[in-house]
Image: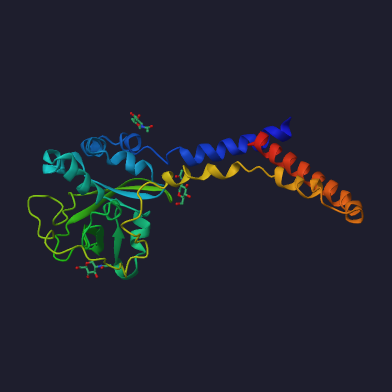
Length: 265
Ligand SMILES: *[C@@H]1O[C@H](CO)[C@@H](O)[C@H](O)[C@H]1NC(C)=O
Ligand SMILES: *[C@@H]1O[C@H](CO)[C@@H](O)[C@H](O)[C@H]1NC(C)=O
Ligand SMILES: *[C@@H]1O[C@H](CO)[C@@H](O)[C@H](O)[C@H]1NC(C)=O
Protein backbone atom coordinates (compact mmCIF):
# COMPACT_ATOMS: atom_id res chain seq x y z
CA UNK A 1 0.00 0.00 0.00
CA UNK A 2 2.61 2.53 1.05
CA UNK A 3 4.80 1.45 -1.87
CA UNK A 4 2.18 2.56 -4.34
CA UNK A 5 1.04 5.69 -2.53
CA UNK A 6 4.50 7.25 -2.39
CA UNK A 7 5.06 7.46 -6.16
CA UNK A 8 1.47 8.58 -6.51
CA UNK A 9 2.06 11.34 -4.02
CA UNK A 10 5.29 12.33 -5.79
CA UNK A 11 3.63 12.66 -9.18
CA UNK A 12 0.88 14.71 -7.61
CA UNK A 13 3.43 17.05 -6.07
CA UNK A 14 5.30 17.40 -9.36
CA UNK A 15 2.07 18.13 -11.22
CA UNK A 16 1.01 20.60 -8.60
CA UNK A 17 4.38 22.36 -8.50
CA UNK A 18 4.56 22.76 -12.27
CA UNK A 19 1.03 24.05 -12.69
CA UNK A 20 0.75 26.28 -9.64
CA UNK A 21 2.12 29.78 -10.09
CA UNK A 22 5.35 30.58 -8.32
CA UNK A 23 3.87 33.37 -6.21
CA UNK A 24 1.05 35.88 -6.00
CA UNK A 25 2.52 39.36 -6.44
CA UNK A 26 -0.81 41.00 -5.55
CA UNK A 27 -0.82 39.25 -2.21
CA UNK A 28 2.85 39.89 -1.46
CA UNK A 29 2.76 43.59 -2.35
CA UNK A 30 -0.59 43.89 -0.57
CA UNK A 31 1.28 43.65 2.74
CA UNK A 32 2.96 47.01 2.10
CA UNK A 33 0.41 49.81 2.12
CA UNK A 34 2.89 52.38 0.74
CA UNK A 35 2.67 50.54 -2.57
CA UNK A 36 -1.09 49.95 -2.77
CA UNK A 37 -1.60 52.19 -5.82
CA UNK A 38 1.24 50.53 -7.70
CA UNK A 39 -0.25 47.18 -6.74
CA UNK A 40 -3.66 48.19 -8.11
CA UNK A 41 -2.04 49.27 -11.36
CA UNK A 42 -0.32 45.91 -11.71
CA UNK A 43 -3.70 44.18 -11.47
CA UNK A 44 -5.57 46.71 -13.62
CA UNK A 45 -3.09 46.38 -16.48
CA UNK A 46 -3.12 42.59 -16.30
CA UNK A 47 0.61 42.47 -15.67
CA UNK A 48 0.19 40.87 -12.23
CA UNK A 49 -0.76 37.49 -13.66
CA UNK A 50 2.17 37.61 -16.10
CA UNK A 51 4.46 38.27 -13.15
CA UNK A 52 2.97 35.35 -11.24
CA UNK A 53 3.89 32.98 -14.02
CA UNK A 54 7.62 33.69 -13.53
CA UNK A 55 9.90 31.97 -11.07
CA UNK A 56 12.46 34.74 -10.64
CA UNK A 57 11.85 38.48 -10.71
CA UNK A 58 12.81 41.78 -9.19
CA UNK A 59 10.01 44.30 -9.04
CA UNK A 60 10.87 48.00 -8.94
CA UNK A 61 7.91 49.44 -7.07
CA UNK A 62 6.93 53.09 -6.82
CA UNK A 63 5.31 54.36 -3.60
CA UNK A 64 1.80 55.87 -3.69
CA UNK A 65 2.95 59.49 -3.52
CA UNK A 66 5.23 59.15 -6.55
CA UNK A 67 3.03 57.22 -8.97
CA UNK A 68 2.19 60.46 -10.80
CA UNK A 69 0.52 60.21 -14.19
CA UNK A 70 0.75 56.40 -14.35
CA UNK A 71 -2.85 56.28 -13.12
CA UNK A 72 -4.10 58.19 -16.17
CA UNK A 73 -2.49 55.98 -18.82
CA UNK A 74 -4.49 53.54 -20.89
CA UNK A 75 -4.22 49.91 -19.79
CA UNK A 76 -2.18 49.09 -22.87
CA UNK A 77 0.43 51.80 -22.31
CA UNK A 78 0.35 51.18 -18.58
CA UNK A 79 1.16 47.52 -19.09
CA UNK A 80 4.19 48.41 -21.22
CA UNK A 81 5.43 50.93 -18.70
CA UNK A 82 4.97 48.58 -15.76
CA UNK A 83 6.65 45.75 -17.65
CA UNK A 84 9.81 47.88 -17.68
CA UNK A 85 9.66 47.80 -13.87
CA UNK A 86 9.94 44.02 -13.73
CA UNK A 87 13.50 42.68 -14.01
CA UNK A 88 13.81 39.05 -15.06
CA UNK A 89 16.49 38.27 -12.52
CA UNK A 90 16.96 38.42 -8.79
CA UNK A 91 18.55 41.58 -7.41
CA UNK A 92 18.63 42.55 -3.76
CA UNK A 93 20.81 45.35 -2.32
CA UNK A 94 23.60 42.89 -1.58
CA UNK A 95 23.73 41.74 -5.19
CA UNK A 96 23.66 45.37 -6.37
CA UNK A 97 26.67 46.08 -4.16
CA UNK A 98 28.58 43.32 -5.91
CA UNK A 99 27.97 44.54 -9.47
CA UNK A 100 31.09 44.57 -11.58
CA UNK A 101 32.14 48.15 -12.39
CA UNK A 102 29.19 49.32 -10.23
CA UNK A 103 26.79 49.16 -13.15
CA UNK A 104 24.61 46.60 -14.89
CA UNK A 105 22.21 46.23 -17.75
CA UNK A 106 19.04 44.40 -16.73
CA UNK A 107 16.49 42.62 -18.91
CA UNK A 108 12.87 43.47 -18.16
CA UNK A 109 9.58 41.79 -18.94
CA UNK A 110 8.96 44.35 -21.66
CA UNK A 111 11.86 42.85 -23.61
CA UNK A 112 9.92 39.57 -23.75
CA UNK A 113 6.77 41.18 -25.07
CA UNK A 114 8.37 41.35 -28.51
CA UNK A 115 7.35 45.01 -28.72
CA UNK A 116 10.64 46.48 -27.56
CA UNK A 117 12.83 48.42 -29.96
CA UNK A 118 16.46 49.28 -29.35
CA UNK A 119 17.12 49.10 -25.63
CA UNK A 120 13.55 49.78 -24.49
CA UNK A 121 13.42 46.36 -22.86
CA UNK A 122 16.52 46.96 -20.76
CA UNK A 123 17.38 48.98 -17.71
CA UNK A 124 20.63 50.51 -16.63
CA UNK A 125 21.44 50.53 -12.93
CA UNK A 126 24.45 52.44 -11.73
CA UNK A 127 25.90 53.08 -8.28
CA UNK A 128 25.74 56.78 -7.50
CA UNK A 129 26.27 58.79 -4.32
CA UNK A 130 26.16 55.76 -2.08
CA UNK A 131 22.94 54.51 -3.59
CA UNK A 132 21.74 53.12 -6.91
CA UNK A 133 20.00 54.84 -9.77
CA UNK A 134 17.75 53.02 -12.24
CA UNK A 135 16.69 54.16 -15.68
CA UNK A 136 15.91 52.98 -19.19
CA UNK A 137 18.96 51.69 -21.06
CA UNK A 138 17.86 53.65 -24.14
CA UNK A 139 20.55 56.16 -25.08
CA UNK A 140 19.77 59.58 -23.66
CA UNK A 141 17.00 58.39 -21.36
CA UNK A 142 16.71 60.07 -18.01
CA UNK A 143 17.99 57.89 -15.18
CA UNK A 144 16.91 59.19 -11.84
CA UNK A 145 14.79 56.54 -10.18
CA UNK A 146 16.73 56.11 -6.97
CA UNK A 147 16.74 52.99 -4.87
CA UNK A 148 14.96 53.94 -1.65
CA UNK A 149 14.70 50.63 0.13
CA UNK A 150 14.42 46.92 -0.08
CA UNK A 151 10.72 46.27 0.48
CA UNK A 152 11.01 42.50 0.72
CA UNK A 153 12.98 39.64 -0.73
CA UNK A 154 12.89 35.90 -0.92
CA UNK A 155 16.22 34.71 -2.35
CA UNK A 156 16.51 33.90 -5.16
CA UNK A 157 12.98 34.12 -6.46
CA UNK A 158 11.50 37.50 -5.71
CA UNK A 159 12.82 40.83 -4.63
CA UNK A 160 10.83 44.05 -4.36
CA UNK A 161 12.88 47.23 -4.42
CA UNK A 162 11.28 50.58 -3.68
CA UNK A 163 12.35 53.32 -6.12
CA UNK A 164 11.76 57.05 -5.89
CA UNK A 165 9.86 57.57 -9.15
CA UNK A 166 8.62 55.66 -12.21
CA UNK A 167 11.13 54.69 -14.84
CA UNK A 168 10.56 56.62 -18.05
CA UNK A 169 11.34 54.71 -21.20
CA UNK A 170 11.31 56.87 -24.36
CA UNK A 171 8.73 55.86 -26.95
CA UNK A 172 6.54 53.58 -24.84
CA UNK A 173 3.80 56.16 -24.73
CA UNK A 174 1.98 56.32 -28.05
CA UNK A 175 1.95 60.12 -27.98
CA UNK A 176 5.62 60.83 -28.55
CA UNK A 177 7.18 58.07 -30.55
CA UNK A 178 10.75 58.93 -31.48
CA UNK A 179 11.49 55.28 -32.00
CA UNK A 180 8.61 54.25 -34.26
CA UNK A 181 10.15 55.28 -37.62
CA UNK A 182 13.15 52.95 -38.07
CA UNK A 183 12.39 49.23 -38.28
CA UNK A 184 13.17 47.40 -35.06
CA UNK A 185 16.58 45.99 -35.79
CA UNK A 186 17.52 42.74 -34.12
CA UNK A 187 19.85 43.92 -31.45
CA UNK A 188 22.26 41.36 -30.19
CA UNK A 189 22.39 42.01 -26.47
CA UNK A 190 26.13 41.69 -26.07
CA UNK A 191 26.49 42.89 -22.54
CA UNK A 192 23.51 41.23 -20.91
CA UNK A 193 23.98 37.56 -20.05
CA UNK A 194 20.33 37.29 -19.10
CA UNK A 195 18.96 38.53 -22.40
CA UNK A 196 16.40 36.27 -23.97
CA UNK A 197 15.13 36.23 -27.52
CA UNK A 198 12.28 38.73 -27.89
CA UNK A 199 10.18 36.52 -30.15
CA UNK A 200 10.12 33.71 -27.63
CA UNK A 201 6.64 32.64 -26.54
CA UNK A 202 5.61 34.28 -23.31
CA UNK A 203 4.17 31.50 -21.25
CA UNK A 204 6.40 28.51 -20.54
CA UNK A 205 3.33 26.68 -19.34
CA UNK A 206 1.99 26.32 -22.87
CA UNK A 207 4.72 23.88 -23.87
CA UNK A 208 3.49 21.31 -21.42
CA UNK A 209 0.13 21.03 -23.13
CA UNK A 210 1.67 19.35 -26.18
CA UNK A 211 3.30 16.42 -24.41
CA UNK A 212 0.68 13.77 -23.54
CA UNK A 213 0.16 12.43 -27.10
CA UNK A 214 2.98 9.86 -26.95
CA UNK A 215 1.49 7.49 -24.44
CA UNK A 216 -0.81 5.52 -26.72
CA UNK A 217 1.34 2.81 -28.25
CA UNK A 218 0.05 -0.60 -29.21
CA UNK A 219 3.01 -2.99 -29.20
CA UNK A 220 1.14 -6.30 -29.44
CA UNK A 221 -0.24 -6.96 -33.00
CA UNK A 222 2.95 -6.88 -35.10
CA UNK A 223 4.65 -9.57 -33.03
CA UNK A 224 2.12 -12.28 -33.99
CA UNK A 225 2.85 -12.08 -37.73
CA UNK A 226 5.95 -14.39 -38.00
CA UNK A 227 4.48 -17.34 -36.08
CA UNK A 228 1.25 -17.43 -38.14
CA UNK A 229 3.00 -17.45 -41.56
CA UNK A 230 1.48 -20.48 -43.40
CA UNK A 231 4.09 -21.00 -46.23
CA UNK A 232 6.86 -22.28 -43.93
CA UNK A 233 8.40 -25.79 -44.53
CA UNK A 234 8.56 -28.31 -41.74
CA UNK A 235 12.16 -27.71 -40.54
CA UNK A 236 11.88 -23.94 -40.15
CA UNK A 237 8.48 -24.40 -38.50
CA UNK A 238 10.15 -26.44 -35.75
CA UNK A 239 12.46 -23.59 -35.03
CA UNK A 240 9.74 -21.04 -34.99
CA UNK A 241 8.00 -21.83 -31.65
CA UNK A 242 10.82 -21.08 -29.20
CA UNK A 243 11.49 -17.50 -30.36
CA UNK A 244 7.79 -16.70 -30.70
CA UNK A 245 6.99 -17.79 -27.16
CA UNK A 246 9.98 -15.82 -25.99
CA UNK A 247 8.73 -12.68 -27.71
CA UNK A 248 5.26 -13.28 -26.34
CA UNK A 249 6.73 -13.44 -22.89
CA UNK A 250 8.58 -10.15 -23.35
CA UNK A 251 5.52 -8.55 -24.92
CA UNK A 252 3.34 -9.48 -21.98
CA UNK A 253 6.04 -8.32 -19.63
CA UNK A 254 6.20 -5.03 -21.54
CA UNK A 255 2.42 -4.72 -21.32
CA UNK A 256 2.65 -5.36 -17.62
CA UNK A 257 5.21 -2.58 -17.25
CA UNK A 258 3.07 -0.19 -19.31
CA UNK A 259 -0.01 -1.07 -17.29
CA UNK A 260 1.91 -0.75 -14.05
CA UNK A 261 3.17 2.73 -14.96
CA UNK A 262 -0.32 3.81 -16.01
CA UNK A 263 -1.70 2.60 -12.70
CA UNK A 264 1.06 4.36 -10.76
CA UNK A 265 0.79 7.64 -12.64
C1 LIG B 1 12.71 29.85 -7.42
O1 LIG B 1 13.67 30.04 -8.43
C2 LIG B 1 14.25 28.84 -8.87
C3 LIG B 1 15.36 29.20 -9.81
O2 LIG B 1 14.95 30.18 -10.73
C4 LIG B 1 13.16 28.00 -9.54
O3 LIG B 1 13.71 26.78 -10.00
C5 LIG B 1 12.06 27.71 -8.53
O4 LIG B 1 11.02 27.02 -9.15
C6 LIG B 1 11.55 29.00 -7.96
N1 LIG B 1 10.63 28.72 -6.86
C7 LIG B 1 9.40 29.13 -6.88
C8 LIG B 1 8.56 28.82 -5.69
O5 LIG B 1 8.95 29.72 -7.86
C1 LIG C 1 -3.71 36.72 -5.30
O1 LIG C 1 -3.99 37.40 -4.10
C2 LIG C 1 -5.11 38.28 -4.20
C3 LIG C 1 -5.20 39.07 -2.91
O2 LIG C 1 -4.96 38.26 -1.81
C4 LIG C 1 -6.36 37.46 -4.51
O3 LIG C 1 -7.48 38.32 -4.60
C5 LIG C 1 -6.16 36.71 -5.79
O4 LIG C 1 -7.25 35.87 -6.05
C6 LIG C 1 -4.90 35.88 -5.75
N1 LIG C 1 -4.64 35.35 -7.07
C7 LIG C 1 -4.33 34.07 -7.27
C8 LIG C 1 -4.07 33.68 -8.68
O5 LIG C 1 -4.27 33.26 -6.37
C1 LIG D 1 24.86 52.65 -17.57
O1 LIG D 1 24.90 54.03 -17.82
C2 LIG D 1 26.11 54.64 -17.40
C3 LIG D 1 25.96 56.14 -17.56
O2 LIG D 1 25.44 56.46 -18.81
C4 LIG D 1 27.26 54.07 -18.20
O3 LIG D 1 28.49 54.65 -17.79
C5 LIG D 1 27.32 52.56 -17.97
O4 LIG D 1 28.31 51.99 -18.77
C6 LIG D 1 25.98 51.93 -18.30
N1 LIG D 1 26.04 50.55 -17.87
C7 LIG D 1 25.89 49.52 -18.70
C8 LIG D 1 26.02 48.17 -18.11
O5 LIG D 1 25.66 49.68 -19.90
